[in-house]
Image (cartoon, rainbow, N blue to C red; front, side):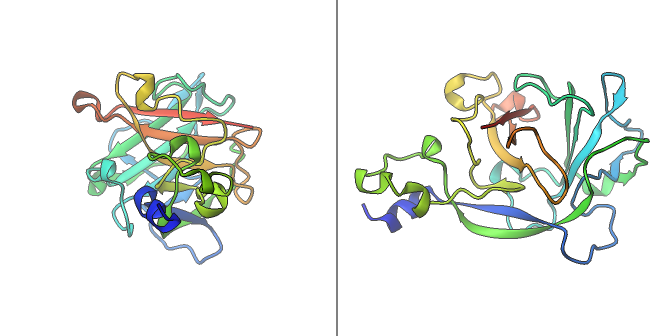
Length: 230
């Protein structure tokens, strides 16, 4: 098997978000890191440990050049995080982290952010299509021939950054809620947020945060989160 044949078998498209460096558009429903500007009418700002959560990001999925299959019915996502503690990997949505997924962007309205001491420097995000994102070796769905194992990461790059779709850039091993771990929702990765120097956002010691969505029919709206670090 040639490296071109391997690449064709394992590659996935992805969206990489550029962080600032361009003229922002005047639209409260644009994508941001460090801001959440919209919510459903009557929806309260999420609270954790008695304090408002930090707005981590909002992502508009309606105008992307690519959308993962497991998000075809979702038009907008907002993510919040505890202001003091990074959540543990097994904590459910709403406990130290909160992901809200909306199926109709037209139902979203402007929301006022509470007075929060957030470390994140807000930047608008611009989507860029990456046609070929490759899995880390732990995630690779096929057996890699011996002649390519040593140079695998030079041949098949897994993109870092704020990424929708593609493959998760792993630090330690497969994500804990991968199918073999028998999570009741059988989640599938769809989104990662790396440490972003420009936005002053750090999970901790070179961590990456990953978000997944349930794939079982009765758990499609169950969202999962975990992180890895060096």
